Image (tube, rainbow, N blue to C red; front, side, top):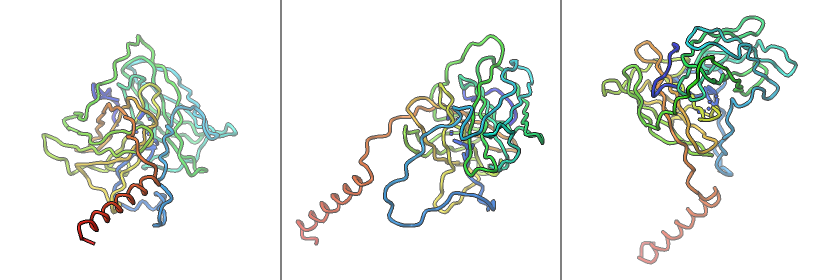
Length: 324
């Protein structure tokens, strides 16, 4: 979350910008080690007043948020040439931010995605002492791109994903979004997706990695995790909220499965980018999915009432037949 390349039919939100992701934004299946800092807070074990409300607000749609601004100093580059992108994160006083919290071993994660979502890059730029970030990228196709910076200032507890537009010069002919599919092949690895996005709520997504038909059980840690997921919404490249799947005992394996929980803010098409390391290299598998409407369901209280009615019906049935 990798060497630069163009993703083909299964090439480049969910910008999670599926921190969202990695905010990236926490879009990982964690390596089971104690990192010694942060982590998800656990609620006390008591009767809940209701299910937690999923945060469906996407990131990456704004250039400024909560007093911070993405100042992209290279708003245009040439297609198919190595280009240096330069930007600064500014605070509410217009000062460059020079102190960040690390997330997944990096202070900042940079996502570049073509508007048609056929090209995708996950970069880790370098920062100079004055707060200027730089990264080198070769973008193969002309057209409109979105630059998404995922970071947490040291002065803040929560991360941000800010977005800006990038123009790549040349004759632009947008490619159609690849058709939805539950399978993707990259660098000889076959990756399958189990699960579906639900609009307005959280759902589970599990990816299984195979090679030559055999499960890959030796995935290697990358940025402190066995997998990273970025999800972008087609159209505006909104960065979706993606989180590591919470295993029953907080554990994670080195494959073949990596699992996440994702929140889609609306129905429609999304592009998912799974980064994983195997054989000493980082690979990116890309999927197109469509988020469907969550089936109607009774509220939390309604569900409890429904369970109570079923229990009463069961007891009545037992009494009627002499079982109680």
